[in-house]
Image (cartoon, rainbow, N blue to C red; front, side):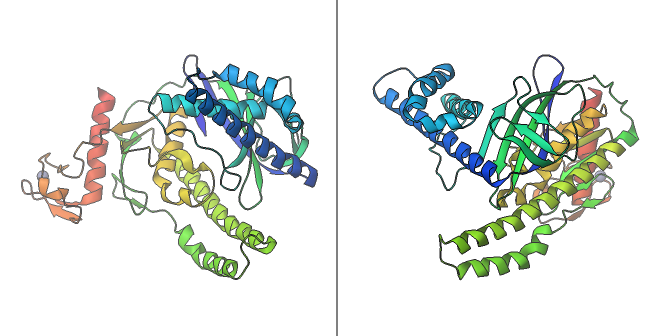
Length: 383
Ligand SMILES: [Zn+2]
């Protein structure tokens, strides 16, 4: 997970750690999630009320002041939790409003207790967040037991931390760092450094060497187990303690699948970025394939390719390479890669193999498309 910032050569990177809070820490976490939701919803109704009365929309700062001056005195329980979490919840609402004002998103919605994600973000100041040997220190919570599988580099600056609870009752913290990017000199574009990939909706892709890359069927493998657990759920009373327990067991299966997939995609993208510097792909509608799927649950199950490209993008850049995006209107499947003529009949998706009417070459639909994507990518790199 990484975001390049504008301006200087600063880059962001997050490390995710699994947390093992104690019972009292869990209680405080639940309170914090609840308070964030409370503040968010209150501010949303305040803003709506102001709009109805013809009053000006409160800015981020004013909304935060409102929370400190009006809400906190009226609801003292808000003072029990991390103050940055509340501020960030308010900023989050404001971001939603700004997207809405710019017609980039829907009107912000109220967060429901049952459906809303259990998460909050806190900021780093004066060493209030620290990564220890087997713990992470967080504001208000103190030391929370954690699995420290990786440490940040010495020159990474800790910016913020986002704590999450998942449906299966597990916790994680995503710690965000900022660091100065050391510029990598670009790898020269040579034949063996470039590969083309053609997206395959059922699997992952077919590459320009004719290799077909599928996603292992983790979901299919887990389906039996999932069906068994869901059957058990039907025999329990909705809302009861046992029902909720069973729901967690189901969520655990989903999270396991999601972790397996992420792990697989990380290995595949690392290997690809080691072998090639330039990977050419079609610029598909990445909104639907976006990296939303870093969370848990069913939504992640369908966008393996989008997640793969996201990982590939930054891994290639780290090695001085690049993910080259070819225009989505480029007719990659219709061009014969041998003679360059165009065969519009191939538009029909049912045609898996075809013979070029001009030069007589026999083409596998996907491999031919991948080769054309690679050729077009090389043209773009040379330009
Ligand atoms: Zn041809």
